[in-house]
Amino acid sequence: MKKKITFLALCAILFAFCLHAEAQQQVKVAKIGWLGSGSASGPGSLRVVFRQVLHEIGYVEGKNIVFEHRFAEGKLDRLPALADELVRLKVDVLLTSSTNEALAAKNATKTIPIVF
Image 1 (cartoon, helix red, strand yellow):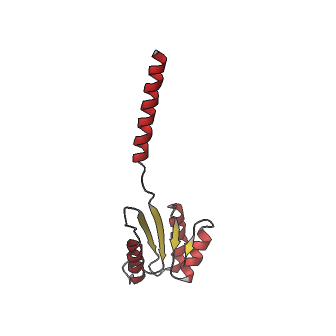
Image 2 (cartoon, one colour):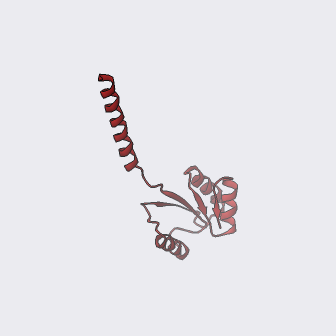
Image 3 (cartoon, one colour):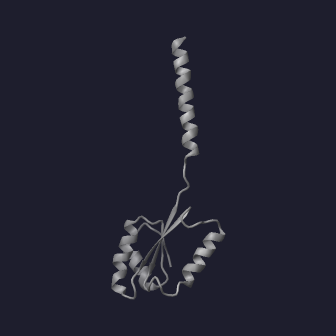
Protein backbone atom coordinates (compact mmCIF):
# COMPACT_ATOMS: atom_id res chain seq x y z
CA MET A 1 0.00 0.00 0.00
CA LYS A 2 2.85 2.35 0.86
CA LYS A 3 4.40 1.75 -2.61
CA LYS A 4 1.11 2.66 -4.32
CA ILE A 5 0.82 5.93 -2.40
CA THR A 6 4.45 6.81 -3.19
CA PHE A 7 3.92 5.97 -6.85
CA LEU A 8 0.75 8.09 -7.06
CA ALA A 9 2.46 11.00 -5.30
CA LEU A 10 5.40 10.79 -7.72
CA CYS A 11 3.02 10.72 -10.70
CA ALA A 12 1.15 13.75 -9.36
CA ILE A 13 4.40 15.69 -8.93
CA LEU A 14 5.58 14.82 -12.45
CA PHE A 15 2.19 15.81 -13.85
CA ALA A 16 2.41 19.17 -12.04
CA PHE A 17 5.88 19.77 -13.49
CA CYS A 18 4.62 19.01 -16.99
CA LEU A 19 1.83 21.56 -16.67
CA HIS A 20 4.21 24.17 -15.29
CA ALA A 21 6.77 23.60 -18.05
CA GLU A 22 4.10 23.85 -20.73
CA ALA A 23 2.92 27.19 -19.38
CA GLN A 24 6.47 28.58 -19.41
CA GLN A 25 7.22 27.94 -23.08
CA GLN A 26 8.28 31.12 -24.83
CA VAL A 27 7.47 32.28 -28.32
CA LYS A 28 10.38 31.92 -30.72
CA VAL A 29 11.85 35.30 -31.53
CA ALA A 30 12.72 35.60 -35.22
CA LYS A 31 16.08 37.24 -35.83
CA ILE A 32 16.36 39.24 -39.07
CA GLY A 33 19.74 40.39 -40.34
CA TRP A 34 19.70 43.60 -42.38
CA LEU A 35 22.82 44.15 -44.49
CA GLY A 36 23.17 47.63 -45.97
CA SER A 37 25.86 49.32 -48.02
CA GLY A 38 24.79 52.81 -46.92
CA SER A 39 24.66 54.26 -43.43
CA ALA A 40 22.29 53.74 -40.54
CA SER A 41 21.42 57.44 -40.56
CA GLY A 42 20.73 57.48 -44.30
CA PRO A 43 17.27 57.33 -45.83
CA GLY A 44 15.60 54.26 -44.38
CA SER A 45 12.19 54.33 -46.02
CA LEU A 46 12.50 50.68 -47.05
CA ARG A 47 13.31 49.68 -43.45
CA VAL A 48 10.42 51.76 -42.12
CA VAL A 49 7.93 50.24 -44.57
CA PHE A 50 9.22 46.73 -43.89
CA ARG A 51 8.84 47.16 -40.13
CA GLN A 52 5.38 48.66 -40.58
CA VAL A 53 4.20 45.72 -42.69
CA LEU A 54 5.61 43.21 -40.19
CA HIS A 55 3.82 45.04 -37.38
CA GLU A 56 0.54 44.90 -39.34
CA ILE A 57 0.78 41.12 -39.59
CA GLY A 58 1.48 40.69 -35.90
CA TYR A 59 5.24 40.99 -35.42
CA VAL A 60 6.36 43.29 -32.60
CA GLU A 61 10.01 44.28 -32.44
CA GLY A 62 11.55 43.04 -29.22
CA LYS A 63 8.66 40.66 -28.53
CA ASN A 64 8.60 38.14 -31.40
CA ILE A 65 11.08 39.68 -33.84
CA VAL A 66 14.55 41.21 -33.54
CA PHE A 67 16.56 43.12 -36.14
CA GLU A 68 20.33 43.00 -36.44
CA HIS A 69 21.50 45.87 -38.66
CA ARG A 70 24.93 46.12 -40.22
CA PHE A 71 25.88 49.02 -42.49
CA ALA A 72 29.02 49.41 -44.60
CA GLU A 73 28.83 53.24 -44.54
CA GLY A 74 29.50 53.37 -48.29
CA LYS A 75 32.61 51.16 -48.04
CA LEU A 76 31.65 48.15 -50.16
CA ASP A 77 34.80 46.25 -49.13
CA ARG A 78 33.28 45.99 -45.62
CA LEU A 79 30.23 44.05 -46.83
CA PRO A 80 31.78 40.54 -46.64
CA ALA A 81 32.88 41.02 -43.02
CA LEU A 82 29.50 42.45 -42.04
CA ALA A 83 27.69 39.56 -43.75
CA ASP A 84 29.94 37.09 -41.90
CA GLU A 85 29.08 38.84 -38.63
CA LEU A 86 25.35 38.45 -39.27
CA VAL A 87 25.83 34.77 -40.08
CA ARG A 88 27.73 34.27 -36.79
CA LEU A 89 24.77 35.87 -34.99
CA LYS A 90 22.64 33.04 -36.40
CA VAL A 91 20.00 35.23 -38.00
CA ASP A 92 16.99 33.45 -39.46
CA VAL A 93 17.01 35.46 -42.69
CA LEU A 94 19.26 38.03 -44.36
CA LEU A 95 17.73 41.09 -46.03
CA THR A 96 19.58 43.07 -48.66
CA SER A 97 18.58 45.77 -51.13
CA SER A 98 21.42 45.82 -53.64
CA THR A 99 23.38 43.36 -55.74
CA ASN A 100 26.63 43.97 -53.83
CA GLU A 101 24.92 43.25 -50.52
CA ALA A 102 23.21 40.13 -51.87
CA LEU A 103 26.50 38.77 -53.25
CA ALA A 104 28.26 39.37 -49.92
CA ALA A 105 25.44 37.54 -48.13
CA LYS A 106 25.52 34.69 -50.65
CA ASN A 107 29.27 34.24 -50.12
CA ALA A 108 28.82 34.26 -46.33
CA THR A 109 26.21 31.49 -46.07
CA LYS A 110 24.75 28.56 -47.91
CA THR A 111 22.01 27.82 -45.38
CA ILE A 112 20.42 31.13 -44.32
CA PRO A 113 17.73 32.42 -46.70
CA ILE A 114 18.57 35.72 -48.42
CA VAL A 115 15.83 38.14 -49.42
CA PHE A 116 16.94 40.63 -52.06
